[in-house]
Structure formats: structure tokens, C-alpha cells
Length: 295
Image 1 (cartoon, rainbow, N blue to C red):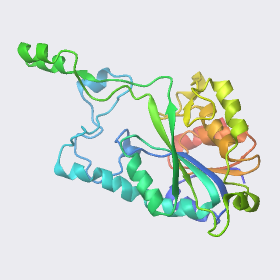
Image 2: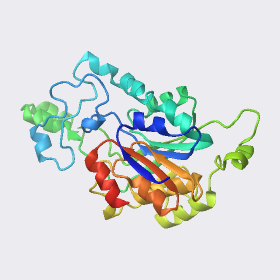
Image 3: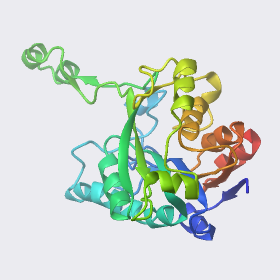
Image 4: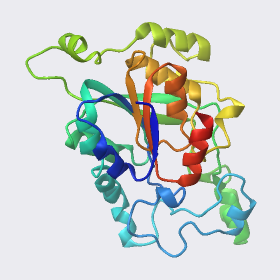
């Protein structure tokens, strides 16, 4: 069962049998123009992913994204186009999951609502939103006064001292928790008997809370410590211990975990550590080779 395949997940997932997966856990593209693989809309503009003096000095933000207001009227369609991109894979995710099985999706704060709508429109139940609190986050909000200083506008610089342009430090990321409905006429307990999915392992979560110094026992807020080994293989790499917590929450040993957008393979590493079967798809050959090395 354990395997990693190189290619487009939209095609590779069609090779999986119906109701063969116990859990889907994936850090999907956020659609916020982070890199080429994250541009999921038609309006690319000539400056998108280019560089500027600010990018040249940054150790984190290496390429230019779009401003929140966009560069053109066409940019207003980006959110809808992200929803349409999600709809390309959500029906197959629904098909391969066992009834009552969970699906955890890491989705960006800005577009998470579109992913939720696509999942619901494909039949999923949106069960909860888990708050993952990171121990560090890149932060670059520009001071308004600095903009006015460059314009030699002393009056407005003083008037807007202390104000910034941009976002607050993004320490929180949503983990969207979906469930495939169990058969009508039965109960969730019946589903657990028939398919061995549908509940969550409170004992395992308490253990993870203790090991990772969680904020509250068995709450929907997760906090894990990022290790040195959790960095350097992918620009959006997640901590192995975080993925282990989610896998232990809803699966048992030998059950099958699928990651259709597996990046550097953290989900698969976590599944292997926990004696779960795993399947992963990755379209980038460099990341794919890194996954094989990690495993």
C-alpha cells in the first residue's frame, strides 16, 4: 500500500478505489501567489512573482504577490477561480474516503471560505476549524509614516505615526476539518463498527497536548514546537509532530492516510512513524525526490 507517485494529483487520485482511504490530510496550495505552484487563477499580470528592491532584501518574501486590492478588475475574480480550482479535486476526495472518515486541510486564511464551500458543495460536512498556533511567523507590515517620509510629507508622517499597512503577525493558521457523511438511517457509532472511522481519539490528543505543551487539553487549538528538521525542504513545510497529532486523532494503526499535495512529504513521514499506511502525490520532481529520501 505505501507509495509515493510523481504527477498531477487530479489525475492520480482517479486510480484509487472508492471508499479505500481512512484519512486525507493535506496542506493544499493557498492560492495567494506564493510561488508558481500557488498561482491558481487566470490573471497573472506581468509583474506577478517578479522582484523589487524590497524583495531583494528579504529573506522570506522572495517574489512579488498581488496587493489585496489587486492590480485590475480581473483580480476580483481570483477568489471565485480558487473555488473553481478546488472543485476540480473535491469530488474525487469524497469518492475515495470511507463513510464517516475525516479530511484535514491546511488552507490559507484568505481563501479558506472558498475551499469550505467547494468541499460542502461536493458533499462533505464541515465539522470544525482547528486553530494551529505557530511558534514563529514571518511578519512585514510597512509603517505608514515611512511612506509619507519618502514623499517628504512631514505633516501626514506625524499624523499617522504608529499605523501600519499590511496584516497582523500571522501566528494562527486554520486547519479545516471535514467529514464524509455516514449512511443515512444509521448512527455514527454504527459507522465506527462498519468502517472503523468516525470518532476521535481523546486519549491520543491528551498525550499530544502533554508532549507539545498544548494551550488547552483536548481543545480545537493546537500548538506544537517546530524542530530544526521541520524547516528547509519546502517553503510551506509543516512540523512532523503536528501531522502526527492529526493522524492519531482520527485513525488507528494500519489504516490508510492520503496526501494528494504532499510537498516535501511530512504527512507521509508522520504516517510512517505511526505505523499507518500512506499514499502521496507530488507534481514537482525535486520535492518528489526529497520525499523518497526522507522516507
